[in-house]
Length: 372
Image 1 (cartoon, helix red, strand yellow):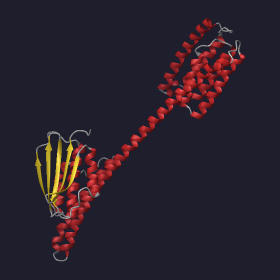
Image 2 (cartoon, one colour; image 1 turned 135 degrees about the horizontal axis):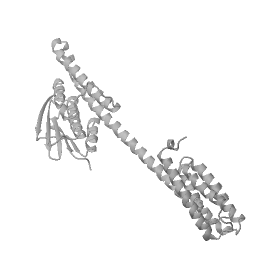
Image 3 (tube, one colour; image 1 turned 60 degrees about the horizontal axis):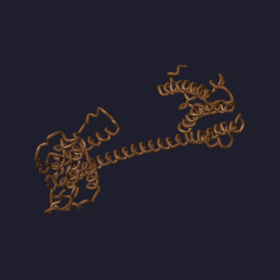
Image 4 (cartoon, rainbow, N blue to C red; image 1 turned 90 degrees about the vertical axis):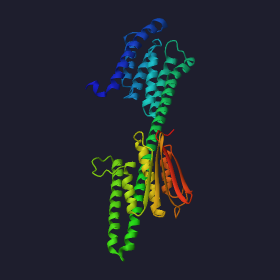
C-alpha cells in the first residue's frame, strides 16, 4: 500500500514526524550528557524516543492511537530512569492532537490514562522526585489539552458561523424568489381579471367584442407563465429554456402592451440616458418597481391611465409612477408596496408612496453602486 494514497496532509505529517524523530534523538543525547541521569541513554532509550516521534505521523488520522503509543514510550522512558528530554515535548504534541481531532470524551480519558502512567516514575525511579514533581508532570498534559480544546471550540464556532451565513444566504434567495413570483403572478392575474371582466361585460350584448379581451387574456397568461418558468428555471439552474422573457427595463415595452390590453393607458416619459449598463440587480429592481406599481393601478382602479417617469442620473435611477387617486390604497399598505420597499432598500435605495396632488404616487430611487 502506497503512502501517497493518504494524500498530501499525511505525507506532510510523516515528513514532520521524521524531522521530530531526528531532532528528539539528538536532543535526548545532549540531555543525557548534561543531565547526569541515573541511567545512561542507550539503544533502548533512543528507540523509545524515535518511536514516540514517529507515532506523530498518524496524529491526525488516528490521534488516540498516537497518544497511546507516545504515552507508553514516554512512560517507559521515564520509568527506566533516563534523563528528561524532548520526549516530553512529543507527549505534549500527542495530547494536543488527540484533544484537537478525536472525540472529546475519549481524548480526555486517554490523556488522563497517559498522565497516570507518567506520574508513576515520580515515586518509583531512582532519585524519586516525589510530590514536588507532580505539578510539572500534570502541566505536560493539561496545558496542551487546554490549547487543543480551545482551538477545537474556535473551529466549531467558525463552522457554525459559516453554516449560519450559508443558511442566511439561502433564506435571502428564497425571499427574493418569493418576491419575484409575487410580482409576476400578481401582475398577470390582475391583467387577466381585468380582461375577463371586460369579456363578461360585452359577451351577451356584443359577443364579437369579447374576442380581443380573450386574446389579451391569452397573451397575458402566456407571458406571465413564461416569466414564472424563467424565474423557477433559474433557481433550479435549468438551461436551454426556449422562453427567456426580458428581465429589467428592456421588458418595459411588453409590460406597457399588457397594461394597454388590460385597459390601462400608460404615459411613459424618459429623462437622460444611462451612461453605462445598469447593474443587473438594479435593472431588475427598476422593472419590478414599475410592474408592481402599474399592477396596483390595474388592481385598484386609477381612472384607466397612469404616468411612468424614468430619470437616469449620474449615480442612480429614479422611477415615478402616478395615477388619479380613485380607490388606490393608502401609502405603505398591502404586501406589494411592502415587498417593493424591501427590494429597493436591500439595494440601498429609497421608496416613498402616498397621495400627492389628488394622485397616488410611488417614487423610487435606486443607486448604481453597492449599498453601504
